[in-house]
Length: 444
Ligand SMILES: Nc1ncnc2c1ncn2[C@@H]1O[C@H](COP(=O)(O)OP(=O)(O)O)[C@@H](O)[C@H]1O
Ligand SMILES: O=C(OP(=O)(O)O)[C@H](O)COP(=O)(O)O
Image 1 (cartoon, rainbow, N blue to C red):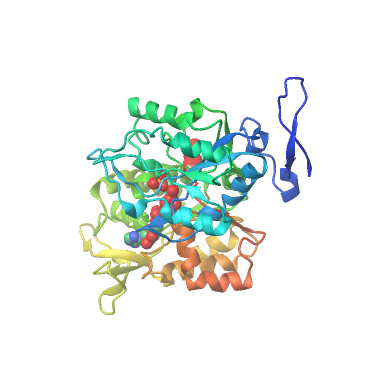
Image 2: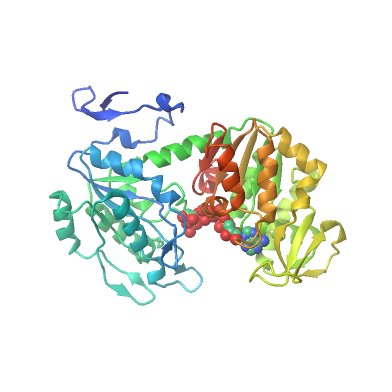
């Protein structure tokens, strides 16, 4: 612990504004020198616009509070050092890129998050209301917010929590609306802090606003960057398991991570897409456009042979559940070009018993897991077996990334079992709580 010194006080010396725990005290290497850190900001009496990734609300309810909890240290740090908080997050994807329309639904309001924060911190957050235009969202930040900022500075309220950033017309725009929102957001505060590691998209509230305000990386962001560095500079052999549902946004990072791994294991819709491209089969729910994208990976793997195939799969007639008589195990060796399948909703646990899989996962020194193998909450069996297999390897460093990934892992019984024998995030367990993909892509 040392006195905290800001880089510039005008006299060539740092200015003492508080104390901070330096990275070496929690065993982390310092981050890149060019990244402005929250610790380097003078926050005394400053209004701080804090962008977080509290994208944890579905249908108005918090599914898992992990992503809120990991930002509490940053909030405490800002307030403890004299800052006043204006927080913002995105929730869901209310903007339809095809129709270019925005649907503002109460389902993805920030209210549940604000309720949680108020219960947790016992301080009052005000949520300003702005006029919402149908299909266009919020055009402008109403100047009535100035009253709230006045109360915030006067410490009559603990903080302001803005509406869902994706309800603003300028959030995903690249032109005039973006510029307008960036200026309006920056007008609210003195300092900007980004603690939204998972918000990988360069939107106005994550990226463009930094043109107008002194900007710093929050503490959660810094932790995540340290963990990501270990994935980018892995101890070898390095095995990545990439699964889940978002093929379109994961194809870029998938290609990037392919270059770095010794072995890659695919699951979920990503794997279904790969199988369609490789075997010329059709699987319900897989888009033709995604199959076309997956063909390059198939070609590349013909020579590099990094992908460890999971041969046993679960085919289900329905996505409504794991209904007796409506699902069955199939094997990739029986695939014939042109064959059509119902939904493939999971990997059969037997897939993890093949010698290639055992060998690959047992000898790994770094394992990175993004997303679950099957359609949750019904088809958890493949993920459970995957986790059991990973758990046998007691020496590898293990990284888990992806919002849905963490939520599903925590919800599943198997993780409760693991956590009862191994403390969560024990020395070789790390959570990249959010989406690591942007970084992996950036470093290509
Ligand atoms: N075969 C599958 N078919 C449909 N959905 C799947 C399948 N496998 C996994 N999923 C779904 O994918 C979701 C996780 O995917 P994704 O959002 O990409 O992960 P993350 O947010 O962890 O990066 C889970 O909610 C799970 O239900
Ligand atoms: O949920 C998130 O990412 P994830 O689904 O990869 O965990 C982040 O909040 C990013 O959301 P976005 O992919 O809609 O920009």
